[in-house]
Length: 447
Ligand code: UDX
Image 1 (cartoon, protein in one colour):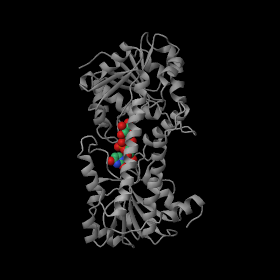
Image 2 (image 1 turned 45 degrees about the vertical axis):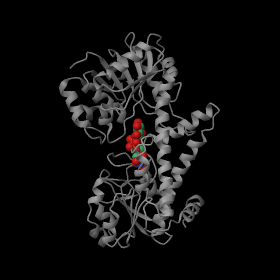
Image 3 (image 1 turned 90 degrees about the horizontal axis):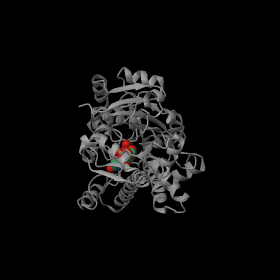
Image 4 (image 1 turned 180 degrees about the vertical axis):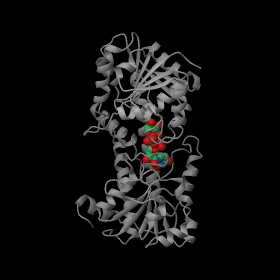
């Protein structure tokens, strides 16, 4: 069903492309603009530049319905739009705050070309006060700016967009908020309509809360391992409490990706600017890095405390499974740290086919293990649990597996003759040498 509403989406990254394709699917006429001519040409051919389940089908459906098109000119894209979504990158500045230069530059560029009474929507994660700055850059008193943060997670972006837990719309103009909320009406989702500052804050609060939760779980995993408990049983028991809930309780090598590190740093910074020391969040950020070091210490411990000249096989490089995104990936950071300590790292990741940052990339999980002294697992790709562990055992020169995602079956690994250690699991003693690792990395020399 064609809603007749003309929507423009500026920026075709994860958020913009997903939003554009999904809004077209919901019946709106969507024009997506991106400054990259190559990207636009690819999208017109139906080639999706990112790895995201279900997105190619939606883009194709949008193209054949005639409701989804791609252009390079922002001005062409906005001139007949009723609603303009800004889905631009807001990278982290040197001081941790969000860099708004792209958002403000585009606002200044499109201001004069907007249709009378159009609504501009901030979908990028931007600090409180950005809506006002965008309004100022637009220079159009008849145009209202609405905050409509996006909560999609990479790998499930389309599903998250079409089945949201909530739609958040914030504006200081009720009718502008209503017009944006109406775009999502076919989803029948719970909608939180609020003021613009609160909407902007909800996104940061949610991401920071989730990051703190994961840091807590990762710290509990370390405690469990030391005290003889099993984090899987502990989180199952915790999650059964409805006030806690079961989601987002899996220990890993630490949180990463394009959102959590950037958003937590920005919230710490914004709080500081307002005179509040968000010590809890600062501690979570520090503990996240410390947790990764703890796992690094296990890998180093597995080869006797010194990785110089040793071969490490690493399964997984992306920041989580289901995405090809390497931004702020704990697995990739582990690889970098290992290289800095003098190890030879050979990695395998189903989405990475060329060597990255001096890290050798193998063609298969087994090939990565060939003659390696230790196997580490950094990303929870489901295919890793399907690899024949007896073949892994015979390919490896050593016998230890440090599973930073708890994806392998511990008894099966033991049966294959491997010495298996995970995150927060009982019974397998590989002693971390974090202190030695810290000294080596922070002192700038190998152990
Ligand atoms: C996140 C938020 O979920 C999303 O709402 C927001 O819009 C952007 O940031 P994303 O970064 O794509 O999405 O990934 P997510 O699946 O949330 O994972 C974030 C990090 O936490 C990853 O490094 C992941 O491996 C880690 N994680 C997640 C765990 O270690 N354990 C878990 O149980 C869940």
